[in-house]
Length: 420
Image (tube, rainbow, N blue to C red; front, top):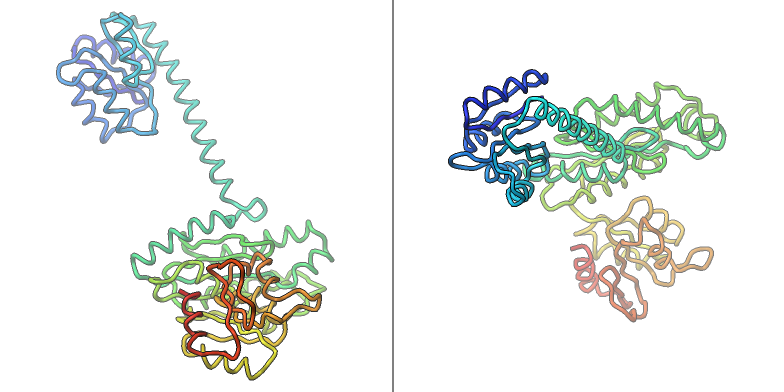
């Protein structure tokens, strides 16, 4: 250990230094409280032996300043003084001392105290190490050893804020294992777990920068954040991942895409992060993933993040669909559906920013589409405009009603309120 000895007496400094050396440690010497504070700025120590009676800053005052400066970092401090009354002992403990020795201090006593404090320091270091390991484990997915969703989001948010300060480009990739449930059902869950481990390691090998983030976002879904990466870079990484997964050549007898395991990748690139949230970029990547899966899987789709919001229009009447689309297409990206089942699938997979729907549209089980969307975790926060519906008994920030026939100006105003 490196032990700081703060003592104004040259005779005691020499003797105490010898004791410290004989105990197998390295002494660092200060002749006053002021000098001790200066030495600590550039010389971290493991223990301090502090004389109480010194000119200038005394030992209690110096210790109080040291404790304030160190904050949560604890090191043992032993006071050495010629005073033995209870009041001085109380002052020493309140100032931040851990032990209190009365002069003259014998060699045996000081060496025993050093050994005791050394054991406490070792236990502190072991505890800090274990806490650091627990913190690391709490951030990792137990199966794949990638970041879990919470840890990924926390670290990605920090990178997002950095990108906003630097005004740099950021890309996100969503990666989904194709037909993973049939694989699990046919080959068994242990085989499925091994596959997820192989895939996560393969994705990791395709990320060549230490600040690229990889996380497990869901059961068989992974997410990648690529800071300082434009559309071309995101495409290159996506292609590399697709090819690397194919090269694993893991047999999949129940895949409708290929005889081996494949992945679908959806990516989004945000050139101007100002004015956007990380959640917006992830939703855009999710929409691209849906397109990749809808177009046959085992491929990637990467797009620039759309400047406009995405609106899903769900209505069975083509004329009303066209009227709604015409009113909103100048300010939004439009997706349409003419039945509840199609609308629900699009809402869950594409995660639009707003849904305009016929409040009478129901699923094959008779459940109103609007209620079904509000009861589904993935879409329950999505804003809705319900057409020709009675006004709700309680107002909400994500639900509006619009009477037919459609007033385009009123529709645009409602959409603007809900998308702002």
